[in-house]
Length: 576
Image 1 (cartoon, rainbow, N blue to C red):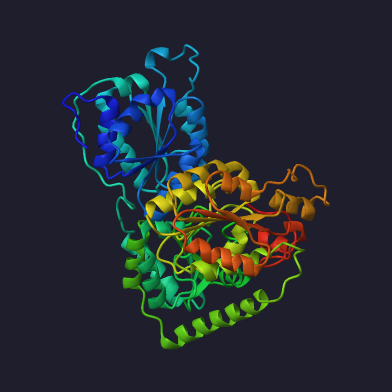
Image 2 (cartoon, rainbow, N blue to C red):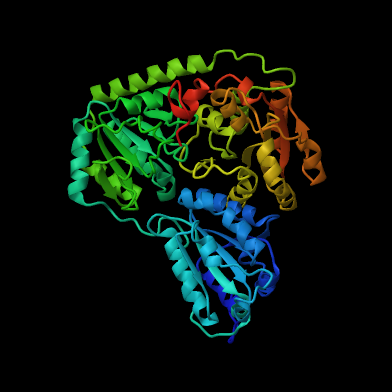
């Protein structure tokens, strides 16, 4: 869009967003932002404004858009309650290193300190959930601030940034150059020091049982081909965190699947626990990811190296490890150049080992499960039915609770994309319904599967109307155990079944869906589910499938005993 010869601050803001390749803004209007919305109304071609039903959800939409598109996601809210709600939608993106630009309007600068109705210190508010936050004090400063915000969000360790615009700054006029920029990840592709690369390559070459442990940084870098090429070159088995799920095709002979303390395949933890050299790629490698720092272990005898764009994070959780600070794709190529190709014998032995443990796990996972009760389905079988219907290349967005361990273990992704999005930064309930909208907007015409729960539905249901209004091809599957099942399970296991605060009243997703313009139906048998999935895949717009499932405390374990799902051990409290 072109600016007037004497544009307003709002016009400069929108023009700069467009010049930086921003094509979508998710937001909710408020009184301090009406001037900005007037500009949106006059320039509907770019950027596209998508009205969310909740500011927190606007943040989740921008998050889902950014994760799967590898471009900055942009969200917007007004002062006061709008800003407070939006801050709640940025914590997950901050913890998961997702580049989001949060734009807020604010009270007139003359009203500061007067107790104006929506006055709040927004810089303090956003300080805990962004890596950078600024307030525009002059309209002329807006283009440079936007350019700095985009560069900061996508540079180094990606993350959310916030820009705050007092309403009089949006209304003011200024003449300023509008720079161009790129909103894509990564902003740069630095390599690691060659001496460190050479040492890590030598460690991997000497190792009898080397393994790669891949996280969400592989997706942020777009390093899927580099990771697969390196793994195949060195015959290196690959395990992933939940955020790293799909970093390599999960049916590949070198794929171990998801490891960690929530939804792992047990053999992946075992392989990491027995490794003598581990390369961590783009993961925080926190307690949950590493099964309480046992997979891999904090053991001086295990050589650990970590690729990360953030020098302060590389190696932080494994004292004595080797930091490889740089872009994942670049550093993986550096390592491949230094690592001798694996021998045919080593390749055959490692692939045979993985095939054996995968087959043993598959036989156990195929065991018939107890009857879940009339009208209920086992979550494991629901996930398998969804996989049959949608296929391994589907975009999948899930909420915490029942979806997380079952998708992690039983859904095999084709890779080459952050195709299975599970929010493990903070694990916020209510994330998936709006985040799926962001994914659908980022990938027009491609169907998105959203697996949520009745508890998360209560927090995110308003944006079913948004999905219907935009006719987005999203299939919402609601796994309903009628309780705050994950917390109830903890009370069952560790608090002698003293249940409290975990049994709210029932929610019926079907009339809720139809009341907002989405077709909704209930599946109480696998045959019904297969039919509904097939219908939804062929439908143009969104739909809802309600699936009653057992409570966690009554359900069989999805992968291992519940204690092991949470901690990787047979006893003890969960480790986070």
